[in-house]
Length: 144
Ligand SMILES: NC(=O)c1ccc[n+]([C@@H]2O[C@H](COP(=O)([O-])OP(=O)(O)OC[C@H]3O[C@@H](n4cnc5c(N)ncnc54)[C@H](O)[C@@H]3O)[C@@H](O)[C@H]2O)c1
Picture 1 (cartoon, rainbow, N blue to C red):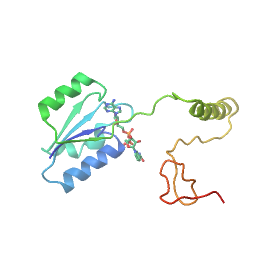
Picture 2: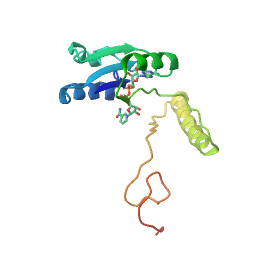
Picture 3: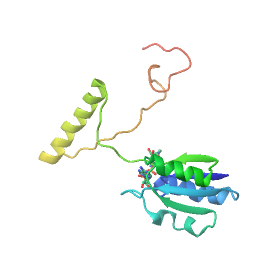
Picture 4: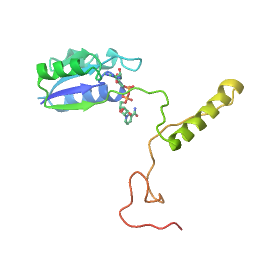
């Protein structure tokens, strides 16, 4: 298979490339990465020695560039790891209220030195969750 790995110079992507080259001896990999603050070619220096690997610097948001790459390389599959931490851009009153709470806390940290941690994890799920959440329960559950 010929794979396009995007964001392969980052943490997860570079580990994936190392794994794919080792475990799938027929795969050829093109790593497309913009090399933002988080990307580094040092993360893929081992892969760079492998003739089944090549690197292209570019932006996945650059439509013409990506189309050209696809036409040239004819990939069988794409694995996307390209990502960047974005400024807060809430799109609903609910998410705005969450974002403003973060900003209140960060203002206290900046102005008064309050030790704080802001964690923006994805939704949690598991035992005792209410069924309306991200991954609903199979059977109907009522609140205790
Ligand atoms: N780190 C984790 O623990 C973890 C766990 C689960 C899922 N993820 C997800 O995996 C993905 C990668 O995470 P990571 O920790 O490897 O991030 P990272 O910041 O280490 O790597 C992101 C890579 O994407 C590249 N990139 C950013 N914008 C780009 C663009 N426009 N075009 C091309 N390349 C671009 C960067 O240069 C960098 O090499 C993210 O979607 C993240 O949410 C991460």
